[in-house]
Length: 130
Image (cartoon, rainbow, N blue to C red; front, side, top):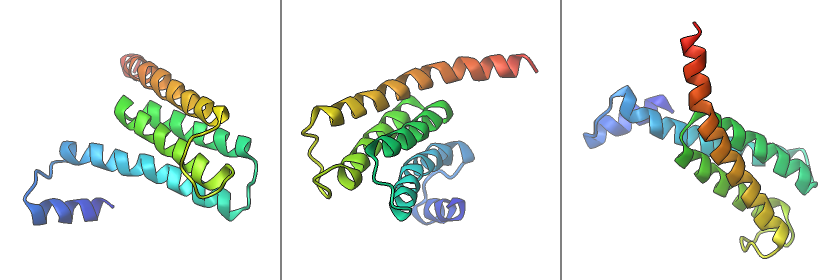
């Protein structure tokens, strides 16, 4: 992935500093984590929406503590759409029609916001204690 980003930057003439590539890399990893979780859960035949939602919640929590609020919210939305499309009946549709689906989106967003706001002070405290 890093090599692809470097090639893209070189070919397009865009700034290719590490600080310019880091947000793109984090975005790819964040959305990629949902894609991998979805593929893994479907691959092993998980049918329980609760198991899927908790797995996605862990991914959103990790992303929110590692990246920015914007990426955490984007990951929350992708997780909700993936849950809806791949695991909730009727399968293969995106409409969020049932109340439970809106509650899942709300939970993902709350985790994203809370973890994103708690992570920077925790990182600062950890760096300060070294």
